[in-house]
Image (cartoon, rainbow, N blue to C red):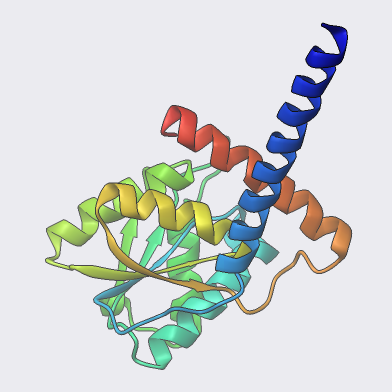
Length: 195
């Protein structure tokens, strides 16, 4: 009996290990390829703002959004992200100000300033898209965040392609491993809770 329980436990742990490895590979793989196609808008997912300035992670997303816009892959940039605790500037407004300083005209910019999470980013972005008759989007985020963002976009019915940032603040193996483990956790959290 004890041997049978030990065998079952080993099989369960082995299966769990294989599953977590498969999820990790899927997250990593999606983030390594740019699938941007001509679309109606570019959704730049929010990240932290430091006062009126983007955090280093957010700045990488903004730079990539500008690049896609300048390559004429979409005529509009849609910035997401509300006000963090105690913040006086929304992530979206910080993103808008940054890209305008780098030559993007205000007429090409759309904002949503209500969201606090990735799921909310995309829910609110979809409302803005619908209000402006936009059908398709390129989603911009960090490479390891891309799989979860695409899954959420698909669940919301957004016709989206992915364009992970080609540069990242998470360069070392340790930093990337930490972010990957975080994303594996949040992928499972989303699959269970829908949030």
